[in-house]
Image 1: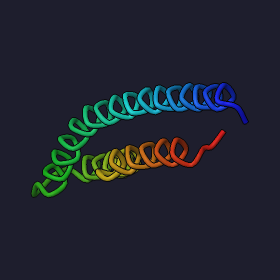
Image 2: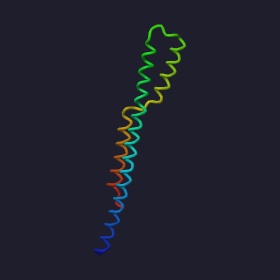
Image 3: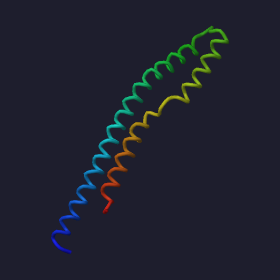
Image 4: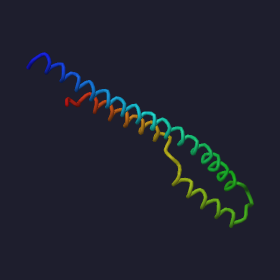
Length: 106
C-alpha cells in the first residue's frame, strides 16, 4: 500500500465520519425539538388532570358530571407522555450515533 493509497483511505474515512456526525447532529436537534413539543403538550394536560381530580373529589357533584370526569380522566391517562420519555429518546439517539460512528470502519 502506497502513501497515496493511505491518504485516499484516510480522506474517505474522514468524509464518512463527517457525514455521520452531521446525521447525528440533525437527529439531536430533532430530538431536542420533540422534547420541547412534548413538554408544551404535557403542561396543559397536567393542568387538566389536576382540575379533573379536583372536580371528582368535590362533594355533592351530580352523578353525570362524575361520569364525565371519569371519562376525561381515562382519556388523559392514555394520552400523557411519560416524564422519562424525552430522556430515553435522547439517550437512544445519542447512543446510536456514537455507536454507529465509533464502530464503523468503512
